[in-house]
Length: 455
Image 1 (tube, rainbow, N blue to C red):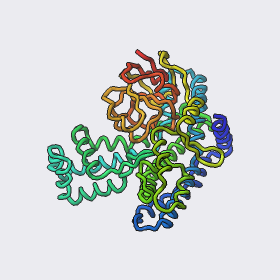
Image 2: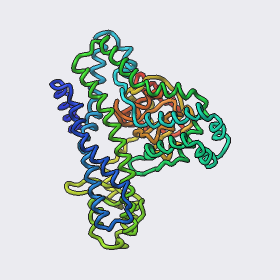
Image 3: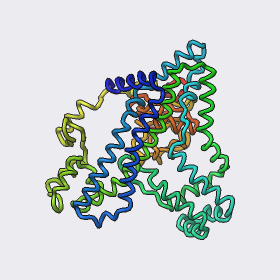
Image 4: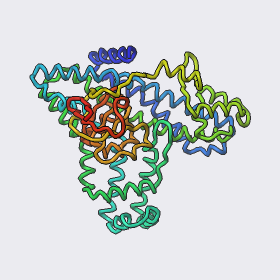
């Protein structure tokens, strides 16, 4: 935290002198972003199986470099997100205390920190909703067909309408990566989006109204924020800080999008390397970056001994940066490492704990702890979603949840942004939620005051 606070304080001081700091940092990053997208396009357009080993590794190394440039040039986001939340919260609290408005803190905090730009998840959702609306407007018979036939039959039927099918193809091309995560590439095809279209029709909500709500929310947030800041006479420094927070929220979303594209195109590259070395895509994910470079010098398949080492890593391992290179440990060495880094304190007897209000409100429900996207399906309507942090592939579960509680994250994090869009209570940064709670427990979430209580 020492480094995080140092970087945050440095940003805060610089914003006093230059309110355009956020815009300048983003402008510097744009070139790295462009070069990353260019190399993604190159991978997409290349038939990897036709490349020689030398050509394949040259492309892999180029992709790796552009990815690192893209990520490192935007790494300041993390320091600011983790270090600025409490400072912004405190400044707003002091401002309201001076005006005897303490009781309005949660609502005002939420409005002043609300996002003013659409996320890539918003854009993907609106794109599909517009296809659904088009079907309702010009081919309602197709809607009835989709509701009463299999996905395969519906996909064949939709091909008869060239205009609608072209829209579906465009959507697939633009958002096939949108349910990726930082490890797995989940390629979404037309059949997947057909399933989502059917779910939209099954809900029966007003599609046009939903599109209007999603597309207008950012501009409404911006206008509400502007009027509220004027009404409260927010100081220039706090105003600058809130502006940088808005800019970094957009930047963070853009970086997450590029991370998901990295997962897709990176998986394509390492899968081709894996095939040539006698590994699966899953197995090659357990080797370190420096070992990947060694594979370039290795002719043919890897040794049996090395493959056995990878098998051990699959059971349990830890990978970390040690001075000059990545190190991966297993077995007894791993157990010793766990003792030094994994907290052993028992939080099970804690009846109440606190975090930061990301979206105000109150809810009661049954706890569902989500450790990965593979567990999202266990969430039922009205459950309390509890996680270390959320990601875009959690959204389906978040929409069914009565409230969201996370251990990590700040006001620019995914959980904070999505909970505000969904207008459900959310508490972030609790640090202990997944340790203090268990699946099935009944809790009340008083997000307005940032409190979680066991019932």
